[in-house]
Length: 338
Ligand SMILES: [Zn+2]
Image (cartoon, rainbow, N blue to C red; front, side, top):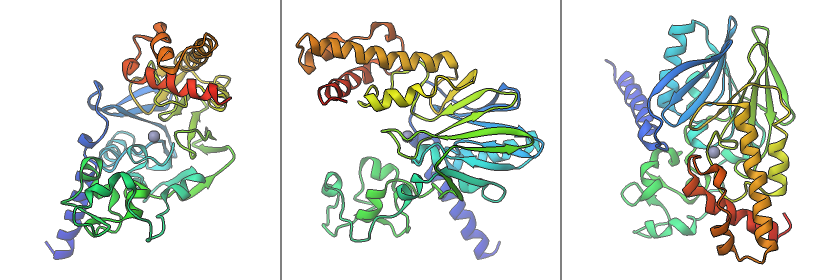
Protein backbone atom coordinates (compact mmCIF):
# COMPACT_ATOMS: atom_id res chain seq x y z
CA UNK A 1 0.00 0.00 0.00
CA UNK A 2 1.31 3.45 -0.86
CA UNK A 3 1.55 6.13 1.79
CA UNK A 4 -1.14 8.20 0.05
CA UNK A 5 -3.54 5.26 0.08
CA UNK A 6 -2.88 4.70 3.77
CA UNK A 7 -3.59 8.35 4.54
CA UNK A 8 -6.88 8.18 2.66
CA UNK A 9 -7.90 5.09 4.60
CA UNK A 10 -7.16 6.78 7.91
CA UNK A 11 -9.09 9.91 6.89
CA UNK A 12 -12.09 7.81 5.90
CA UNK A 13 -12.00 5.89 9.15
CA UNK A 14 -11.75 9.10 11.16
CA UNK A 15 -14.77 10.69 9.52
CA UNK A 16 -16.79 7.51 10.04
CA UNK A 17 -15.83 7.35 13.70
CA UNK A 18 -16.62 11.03 14.06
CA UNK A 19 -20.26 10.34 13.38
CA UNK A 20 -20.74 6.93 14.88
CA UNK A 21 -24.31 6.18 15.86
CA UNK A 22 -23.40 6.55 19.52
CA UNK A 23 -23.09 10.37 19.36
CA UNK A 24 -26.67 10.75 18.09
CA UNK A 25 -29.80 11.12 20.23
CA UNK A 26 -30.66 7.75 21.75
CA UNK A 27 -34.22 6.57 22.41
CA UNK A 28 -36.08 3.25 22.41
CA UNK A 29 -35.85 3.13 18.59
CA UNK A 30 -32.91 0.95 17.62
CA UNK A 31 -31.47 -0.54 14.49
CA UNK A 32 -30.53 0.31 10.95
CA UNK A 33 -33.09 -0.69 8.33
CA UNK A 34 -34.82 0.11 5.07
CA UNK A 35 -38.56 -0.42 4.65
CA UNK A 36 -41.24 0.33 2.09
CA UNK A 37 -43.78 3.07 2.78
CA UNK A 38 -45.86 3.05 -0.40
CA UNK A 39 -45.32 2.93 -4.15
CA UNK A 40 -41.68 3.74 -4.84
CA UNK A 41 -41.10 5.56 -1.56
CA UNK A 42 -39.12 3.98 1.27
CA UNK A 43 -37.89 4.98 4.70
CA UNK A 44 -34.42 4.36 6.09
CA UNK A 45 -33.81 4.29 9.82
CA UNK A 46 -30.72 4.78 11.96
CA UNK A 47 -31.97 4.19 15.49
CA UNK A 48 -33.99 7.30 16.48
CA UNK A 49 -33.46 8.95 13.08
CA UNK A 50 -35.44 8.54 9.86
CA UNK A 51 -34.85 9.45 6.25
CA UNK A 52 -37.02 8.91 3.16
CA UNK A 53 -36.19 8.18 -0.46
CA UNK A 54 -37.97 7.57 -3.76
CA UNK A 55 -36.66 5.11 -6.34
CA UNK A 56 -37.23 5.67 -10.08
CA UNK A 57 -35.65 4.07 -13.14
CA UNK A 58 -33.64 7.31 -13.55
CA UNK A 59 -32.28 7.37 -10.03
CA UNK A 60 -33.10 8.10 -6.41
CA UNK A 61 -34.30 11.22 -4.58
CA UNK A 62 -33.19 11.16 -0.93
CA UNK A 63 -33.94 13.51 1.96
CA UNK A 64 -31.78 13.49 5.13
CA UNK A 65 -28.28 12.02 4.79
CA UNK A 66 -28.20 11.95 8.66
CA UNK A 67 -24.44 11.35 8.97
CA UNK A 68 -21.29 10.08 7.29
CA UNK A 69 -21.50 6.59 8.76
CA UNK A 70 -25.19 6.16 7.95
CA UNK A 71 -24.88 7.70 4.48
CA UNK A 72 -22.01 5.33 3.66
CA UNK A 73 -24.10 2.34 4.74
CA UNK A 74 -27.17 3.61 2.88
CA UNK A 75 -25.25 4.25 -0.34
CA UNK A 76 -24.10 0.64 -0.41
CA UNK A 77 -27.60 -0.66 0.33
CA UNK A 78 -29.20 1.50 -2.37
CA UNK A 79 -26.65 0.43 -4.96
CA UNK A 80 -27.11 -3.28 -4.28
CA UNK A 81 -30.91 -3.23 -3.93
CA UNK A 82 -31.93 -0.78 -6.65
CA UNK A 83 -28.92 -0.45 -8.97
CA UNK A 84 -29.56 3.22 -9.72
CA UNK A 85 -27.60 6.20 -8.35
CA UNK A 86 -28.83 8.87 -5.95
CA UNK A 87 -29.57 11.90 -8.13
CA UNK A 88 -30.83 14.39 -5.53
CA UNK A 89 -30.26 14.86 -1.82
CA UNK A 90 -32.68 17.34 -0.21
CA UNK A 91 -31.71 18.91 3.12
CA UNK A 92 -34.48 19.56 5.65
CA UNK A 93 -32.26 22.02 7.54
CA UNK A 94 -28.60 22.52 8.44
CA UNK A 95 -28.41 20.78 11.84
CA UNK A 96 -25.52 18.30 12.07
CA UNK A 97 -27.63 15.29 13.07
CA UNK A 98 -29.72 15.54 9.88
CA UNK A 99 -27.54 17.30 7.30
CA UNK A 100 -24.19 15.54 7.74
CA UNK A 101 -22.95 13.03 5.18
CA UNK A 102 -24.37 14.33 1.88
CA UNK A 103 -20.82 14.44 0.49
CA UNK A 104 -21.02 10.65 0.30
CA UNK A 105 -23.54 11.04 -2.55
CA UNK A 106 -21.90 14.04 -4.25
CA UNK A 107 -20.37 11.92 -7.03
CA UNK A 108 -23.83 11.34 -8.55
CA UNK A 109 -26.24 13.70 -6.76
CA UNK A 110 -27.10 17.38 -6.69
CA UNK A 111 -27.59 18.56 -3.15
CA UNK A 112 -30.48 20.92 -2.52
CA UNK A 113 -31.07 23.20 0.46
CA UNK A 114 -32.98 26.34 1.44
CA UNK A 115 -30.97 29.49 0.67
CA UNK A 116 -30.86 30.41 4.38
CA UNK A 117 -28.65 27.35 4.88
CA UNK A 118 -25.67 29.13 3.31
CA UNK A 119 -25.43 31.68 6.12
CA UNK A 120 -25.85 28.94 8.73
CA UNK A 121 -22.88 27.03 7.31
CA UNK A 122 -20.64 30.09 6.89
CA UNK A 123 -17.70 30.40 9.28
CA UNK A 124 -17.94 33.57 11.42
CA UNK A 125 -14.96 36.00 11.37
CA UNK A 126 -11.69 34.59 12.81
CA UNK A 127 -11.80 37.28 15.51
CA UNK A 128 -14.98 35.79 17.02
CA UNK A 129 -14.30 35.10 20.72
CA UNK A 130 -15.22 31.86 22.46
CA UNK A 131 -18.88 32.02 23.54
CA UNK A 132 -19.28 32.88 27.23
CA UNK A 133 -20.80 29.51 28.12
CA UNK A 134 -17.71 27.52 27.06
CA UNK A 135 -14.96 29.93 28.16
CA UNK A 136 -14.38 28.01 31.41
CA UNK A 137 -13.18 25.05 29.30
CA UNK A 138 -10.25 27.11 28.03
CA UNK A 139 -8.05 26.07 30.96
CA UNK A 140 -4.79 27.51 29.56
CA UNK A 141 -6.50 30.78 28.63
CA UNK A 142 -5.21 30.92 25.05
CA UNK A 143 -8.60 31.74 23.59
CA UNK A 144 -9.02 28.29 22.02
CA UNK A 145 -10.24 24.95 23.31
CA UNK A 146 -7.73 22.17 22.72
CA UNK A 147 -8.92 18.58 22.47
CA UNK A 148 -7.68 17.87 26.00
CA UNK A 149 -9.66 20.82 27.38
CA UNK A 150 -12.96 20.10 25.65
CA UNK A 151 -15.90 18.93 27.75
CA UNK A 152 -19.48 17.79 27.18
CA UNK A 153 -20.68 18.34 23.57
CA UNK A 154 -17.40 19.96 22.53
CA UNK A 155 -15.63 16.79 23.64
CA UNK A 156 -17.93 14.19 22.06
CA UNK A 157 -18.37 16.24 18.87
CA UNK A 158 -14.86 17.70 18.70
CA UNK A 159 -14.16 16.65 15.09
CA UNK A 160 -17.56 17.99 14.03
CA UNK A 161 -16.51 21.46 15.20
CA UNK A 162 -12.84 21.45 14.19
CA UNK A 163 -13.23 22.68 10.60
CA UNK A 164 -9.51 23.29 9.96
CA UNK A 165 -8.54 20.06 11.79
CA UNK A 166 -5.83 21.80 13.80
CA UNK A 167 -6.78 20.07 17.05
CA UNK A 168 -8.17 23.19 18.69
CA UNK A 169 -11.55 24.93 18.53
CA UNK A 170 -11.55 28.66 17.84
CA UNK A 171 -14.35 30.99 18.89
CA UNK A 172 -15.54 30.99 15.28
CA UNK A 173 -15.66 27.18 15.10
CA UNK A 174 -17.58 26.88 18.37
CA UNK A 175 -19.99 29.65 17.39
CA UNK A 176 -20.76 28.08 14.01
CA UNK A 177 -21.53 24.68 15.47
CA UNK A 178 -20.73 21.01 14.79
CA UNK A 179 -21.15 21.33 11.03
CA UNK A 180 -17.91 19.98 9.55
CA UNK A 181 -19.71 17.15 7.77
CA UNK A 182 -22.60 19.26 6.47
CA UNK A 183 -21.64 19.93 2.86
CA UNK A 184 -23.03 23.20 1.47
CA UNK A 185 -25.88 22.63 -1.03
CA UNK A 186 -25.09 22.73 -4.76
CA UNK A 187 -28.47 24.25 -5.43
CA UNK A 188 -30.39 26.60 -3.15
CA UNK A 189 -34.00 27.67 -3.42
CA UNK A 190 -36.33 30.19 -1.76
CA UNK A 191 -39.74 29.65 -3.35
CA UNK A 192 -41.23 26.15 -3.66
CA UNK A 193 -39.64 23.99 -6.37
CA UNK A 194 -40.64 20.69 -7.94
CA UNK A 195 -38.09 18.09 -8.93
CA UNK A 196 -39.14 15.55 -11.55
CA UNK A 197 -37.20 12.32 -11.78
CA UNK A 198 -38.29 9.24 -13.71
CA UNK A 199 -41.56 11.05 -14.44
CA UNK A 200 -42.38 11.46 -10.74
CA UNK A 201 -42.66 14.75 -8.92
CA UNK A 202 -41.18 15.73 -5.60
CA UNK A 203 -42.14 19.08 -4.06
CA UNK A 204 -39.53 20.97 -2.05
CA UNK A 205 -41.34 23.46 0.19
CA UNK A 206 -39.82 26.20 2.37
CA UNK A 207 -41.18 26.36 5.94
CA UNK A 208 -38.82 28.56 7.99
CA UNK A 209 -39.47 27.88 11.68
CA UNK A 210 -38.19 28.98 15.07
CA UNK A 211 -36.17 25.74 15.16
CA UNK A 212 -34.49 26.39 11.81
CA UNK A 213 -34.86 29.35 9.46
CA UNK A 214 -33.77 27.07 6.60
CA UNK A 215 -36.46 24.47 7.31
CA UNK A 216 -37.69 22.53 4.27
CA UNK A 217 -40.43 19.92 3.97
CA UNK A 218 -40.67 17.44 1.10
CA UNK A 219 -43.78 15.98 -0.52
CA UNK A 220 -43.53 12.93 -2.76
CA UNK A 221 -46.41 13.36 -5.18
CA UNK A 222 -46.98 10.83 -7.95
CA UNK A 223 -48.12 7.39 -6.94
CA UNK A 224 -47.08 7.90 -3.33
CA UNK A 225 -48.45 10.66 -1.11
CA UNK A 226 -45.66 10.87 1.44
CA UNK A 227 -44.74 13.98 3.40
CA UNK A 228 -41.41 14.36 5.18
CA UNK A 229 -40.74 17.04 7.81
CA UNK A 230 -37.70 17.09 10.06
CA UNK A 231 -37.89 17.82 13.82
CA UNK A 232 -40.73 20.29 13.37
CA UNK A 233 -43.84 18.09 13.29
CA UNK A 234 -43.42 14.98 15.40
CA UNK A 235 -45.41 11.74 15.51
CA UNK A 236 -47.18 10.98 18.81
CA UNK A 237 -44.46 12.96 20.53
CA UNK A 238 -44.82 16.26 22.38
CA UNK A 239 -43.11 18.99 20.33
CA UNK A 240 -39.76 20.27 21.58
CA UNK A 241 -39.12 23.71 23.03
CA UNK A 242 -41.23 26.70 23.97
CA UNK A 243 -42.22 28.23 20.64
CA UNK A 244 -44.69 25.50 19.72
CA UNK A 245 -47.97 27.41 19.91
CA UNK A 246 -47.09 31.01 19.11
CA UNK A 247 -49.29 32.75 16.57
CA UNK A 248 -46.76 32.51 13.69
CA UNK A 249 -45.84 28.90 14.54
CA UNK A 250 -49.49 27.83 14.62
CA UNK A 251 -50.18 29.60 11.35
CA UNK A 252 -47.20 27.90 9.72
CA UNK A 253 -47.91 24.42 11.00
CA UNK A 254 -51.51 24.73 9.78
CA UNK A 255 -50.31 25.26 6.21
CA UNK A 256 -49.33 21.57 6.18
CA UNK A 257 -52.80 20.21 6.91
CA UNK A 258 -54.35 20.99 3.49
CA UNK A 259 -51.48 19.30 1.61
CA UNK A 260 -52.39 16.01 0.01
CA UNK A 261 -50.57 13.05 1.54
CA UNK A 262 -51.31 9.83 3.38
CA UNK A 263 -48.01 8.83 4.95
CA UNK A 264 -46.04 11.15 7.18
CA UNK A 265 -42.43 10.73 8.23
CA UNK A 266 -40.77 12.92 10.83
CA UNK A 267 -36.99 12.71 11.06
CA UNK A 268 -37.38 11.25 14.55
CA UNK A 269 -39.17 8.35 16.19
CA UNK A 270 -42.04 6.37 14.76
CA UNK A 271 -43.52 6.34 11.27
CA UNK A 272 -46.78 8.28 10.92
CA UNK A 273 -49.87 9.05 8.90
CA UNK A 274 -51.62 12.29 8.06
CA UNK A 275 -53.77 11.88 11.17
CA UNK A 276 -50.59 12.23 13.24
CA UNK A 277 -49.91 15.62 11.66
CA UNK A 278 -53.48 16.67 12.43
CA UNK A 279 -53.04 15.52 16.06
CA UNK A 280 -49.82 17.50 16.35
CA UNK A 281 -51.62 20.65 15.20
CA UNK A 282 -54.57 19.98 17.55
CA UNK A 283 -52.15 19.56 20.48
CA UNK A 284 -50.69 23.00 19.80
CA UNK A 285 -54.14 24.60 19.47
CA UNK A 286 -55.42 22.97 22.66
CA UNK A 287 -52.25 23.96 24.50
CA UNK A 288 -52.66 27.58 23.48
CA UNK A 289 -56.33 27.55 24.48
CA UNK A 290 -55.60 25.97 27.87
CA UNK A 291 -52.77 28.37 28.67
CA UNK A 292 -54.91 31.35 27.63
CA UNK A 293 -57.60 30.11 30.00
CA UNK A 294 -55.07 29.79 32.82
CA UNK A 295 -53.86 33.34 32.21
CA UNK A 296 -57.48 34.52 32.11
CA UNK A 297 -57.99 32.93 35.52
CA UNK A 298 -55.05 34.92 36.86
CA UNK A 299 -52.65 31.98 37.18
CA UNK A 300 -48.91 32.53 37.48
CA UNK A 301 -46.55 30.69 35.13
CA UNK A 302 -45.90 28.07 37.80
CA UNK A 303 -49.62 27.60 38.41
CA UNK A 304 -50.24 27.27 34.68
CA UNK A 305 -47.50 24.65 34.39
CA UNK A 306 -49.21 22.67 37.13
CA UNK A 307 -52.76 23.06 35.81
CA UNK A 308 -52.29 22.69 32.05
CA UNK A 309 -51.72 18.95 32.05
CA UNK A 310 -52.84 18.17 28.49
CA UNK A 311 -54.17 14.83 29.73
CA UNK A 312 -55.27 13.63 26.30
CA UNK A 313 -51.59 13.50 25.29
CA UNK A 314 -50.19 11.75 28.37
CA UNK A 315 -49.13 8.71 26.35
CA UNK A 316 -47.13 10.76 23.83
CA UNK A 317 -43.36 10.44 23.91
CA UNK A 318 -41.47 13.16 25.81
CA UNK A 319 -44.68 14.21 27.59
CA UNK A 320 -42.95 14.51 30.97
CA UNK A 321 -39.86 16.26 29.58
CA UNK A 322 -41.45 18.71 27.15
CA UNK A 323 -44.92 19.63 28.47
CA UNK A 324 -43.68 22.10 31.13
CA UNK A 325 -41.50 23.92 28.57
CA UNK A 326 -44.36 23.96 26.06
CA UNK A 327 -46.62 25.57 28.67
CA UNK A 328 -43.96 28.09 29.73
CA UNK A 329 -43.17 29.17 26.16
CA UNK A 330 -46.84 29.52 25.33
CA UNK A 331 -47.52 31.44 28.57
CA UNK A 332 -44.75 33.94 27.73
CA UNK A 333 -45.87 34.22 24.12
CA UNK A 334 -49.48 34.95 25.09
CA UNK A 335 -48.35 37.54 27.66
CA UNK A 336 -46.25 39.21 24.95
CA UNK A 337 -49.17 39.21 22.50
CA UNK A 338 -47.69 36.49 20.31
ZN1 LIG B 1 -32.91 20.16 14.01
